[in-house]
Image (cartoon, rainbow, N blue to C red; front, side, top):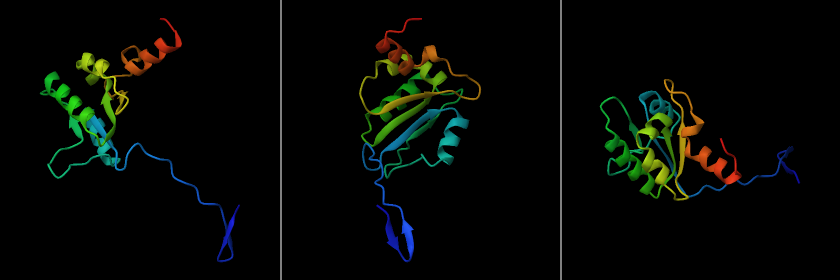
Length: 135
């Protein structure tokens, strides 16, 4: 049913989709280009304790540092999605594959230098397993 306001017919108001939590964040672990793009899109945040929701991985970053950031982001109650470059997730594959909580969602994405490999994506592999698809 349309409303009339100031001589114009207006469509009915629609409710916005509900989010998982008020103020949920997207955390990012990626190369410089990926993190920069996500920050420009507005996902970056530094809280009062100077804790960021992103990590730039470069040649000096060790797998231990990546794993520590991954665990820190997945334990945060305000993070709904963790975006990680697939080649970086491969560096800590046992930790990524071992994460079984419902939230946050883990999203592996390609980078400029490393194309997407479906065989490395845990979501892709689990979906195939659930559907009974074999290679």
